[in-house]
Image 1: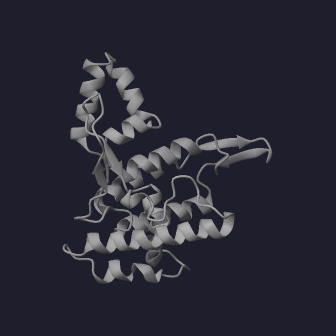
Image 2: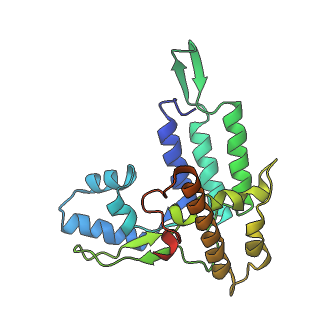
Image 3: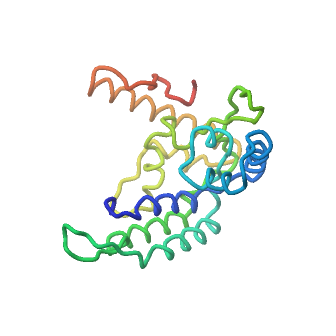
Length: 220
C-alpha cells in the first residue's frame, strides 16, 4: 500500500482524524501569520493543511479526542478513500488503495478507537512549555510521538488487538488508572521503556542514538 500514490494523503487523513487542533492555538498562529508575516488566508490555510513544520507543531497543540469523535472522523476518512484505485504498472492491473488486508486494518483501528485505546488519557499532561520565542507565541513540547513514548503506545493498544500478548509493564496503568495516580504511573512506564530502549541501543551498536539519553526525552 505504501507504493500507492495516495498513501501519503491517507496517512495525513488518519492523523487529522485522530488528532484535533486546540483552536485557541490555531487562532493565535493565524493572527500572527496574518498580521506580522502578512500572509493571505489561502497561504495560511495551505501552511496548516500540509505536512506541518516544527514551527507549527511547537505552536499548535493537538488532542487525541474521545472515542465518539474519533469513530466519526475515522469513519469519514476511510469512506473517502474506500473507492480510490491506481493502475500498478508492475502488476499490470488496477489495484485499490484499501484492499482486503487494509480494510481489516481499518476495522482494527476503529475497534481500538471505540475501546478508547487511541484517545489521550484524562488528567495526564502531554504538553510542556518551552522557552519563549521571539515571535511571542507560546511554544510547546509534546511527549506524545517523541522518543519519550517510543513504542509504549503499541503495548498499550495490545489488549484490544488479536494474537498479541499484554505487556506486563502496563499493569500499573490498568490497575491504578485513577485521577490521582495515572500521571505517576505513566511517568514510570515511560521511564522503564526509555531505559529499555537505551540499553538495547548500547547492546546493538555500542553507543546510543543521538539525543537518546539514559532518561530519554521525558526528563530532559
